[in-house]
Image (cartoon, rainbow, N blue to C red; front, side):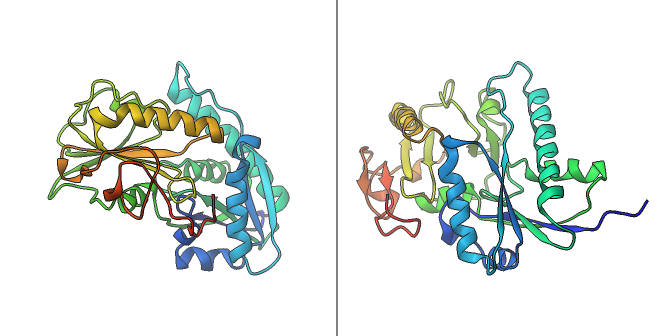
Length: 289
């Protein structure tokens, strides 16, 4: 039996929502794409699909196909987290493989646009490994790194990620609930669906951000005990407005990053020193709110 012809697939990190997060390498990688594949979570995330389409329209230099693939649903509070994620990845792999076979011809180049960086808390590379392991479709994969939400969070708050000579840990809300990681001064928390901050030292410094790079970006910084309730309130209100939320936070034992003005409530400004909650300027490259 002859081998199936190779298709090229580029996994492109696109940052957190600001089109200017694209690197020059990402722009070059998109220029000659034939088809872009988008995992579509239906109406509640239509604006995320629209953002990716705007990026494609700006940087793909020829007509291209936008292929929406229905993202299989996933139980959010499963009894067996590992088994649930494994099944979800398998379902995603099946749907993406079928889409590649149907909509990406031999010798063509396709793209998957990934939020942040493809290597950090994203399932795309693992799913492509599954497709490759089955051996039914030959894909030459290229990975283009992107600006991660960790980098954007620190940049928007104008704070360093680590203490001097200190260790950091990047983890999930689920794991943080088990306790502060041993031997680290700073912890970045991603994928926290319900941040309660239970059991954490209220004297920790927190830098929190949601919708980083987007027009409705929200930033909060301060002593955890002072701002935890405000973060939960702002997060709940934002999720109700959008139907979804992408957020991240940095916890640190270093108190030097606490802004002197801890006031909340939509302070306008260019940096976190102007208040604990910020919105981007109206001339954001992402467009006006």
